[in-house]
Image (cartoon, rainbow, N blue to C red; front, side, top):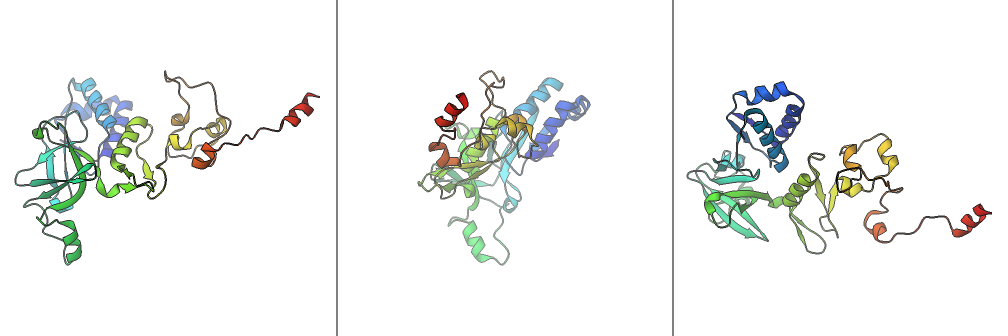
Length: 275
């Protein structure tokens, strides 16, 4: 059995792609994988599956669940194989789960003998952590893997505590947005910071999309950004770099992008040059 956090699996996958001996030794006696502490990106699981099939002819069973220190530490667990990285399973024996609609999501709360009765000498915090029926508010959202079959279990659907509203009143589901962004830019970026609380639009930091377009000067000068230089190169439909390179960066973000002012020299200068 091998247990690690998602970031550890990301580094492991990269290392095994470069080191055949490591890959062969890692899978030689392995029967079970387990990840915890954070959400595993789908592209990492897919890459790990591909390495396992390439090495030993079959996928390795990746096990996971959902819990917290207050649930000692597991409340939900998946004990069957699934190609979905976010599939977390069903409540473990003697644990009850309660689903509470919160906006367009389902908040999950748990109750059982493994759940703490409260926080030491912090009555206010204890009252806030439990609802009237004694279910612990773990702060996570889930969805059904198969809406027609509850036995297919739950899939992780983000942290409710991360969500926020824009100035327009629109709720931003940060966990879902981050997961999709990471999948879209994989393997160039590992994580995103989503901003925009009480502002007019969403911001995604450390993103080549946010800082696009990149000029030739950006790419040839020393690189100090959070994403690799290759992620900034404009790509055509076939993945071949485009031949056109923009001469300027984005102008003043939101306002400037929609209110462009030509910075070309006046026509008189062209006339004088022609003379």
